[in-house]
Length: 103
Image (cartoon, rainbow, N blue to C red; front, side):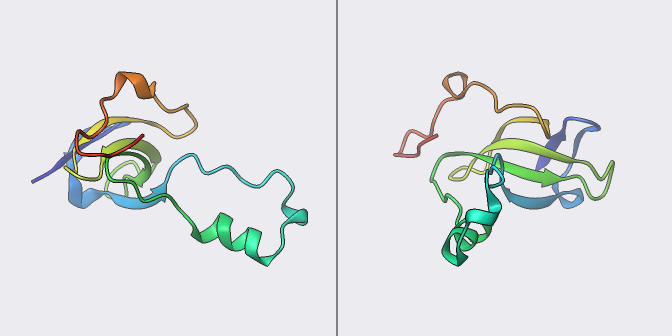
């Protein structure tokens, strides 16, 4: 069983959570200026690194709040969780994957 540390409720079973994609994706500065390709890139194109990755999660079986997490996509280990709206923890403080992953 994997425990995910909800920043609002504490550690809970992974079955209570829902994955929400890449974190910190900024809304387009001028959405009216985007063409179809620009909208497609904003909506569907995401990073897919092997290593540390910032993700959005929702605690659906608990407080139902969204939060962000830093997770190693190679080992599936969660390095940090933090409330939505807060900036990502210092990348230098979190070690990258040793087999080629990037931050």
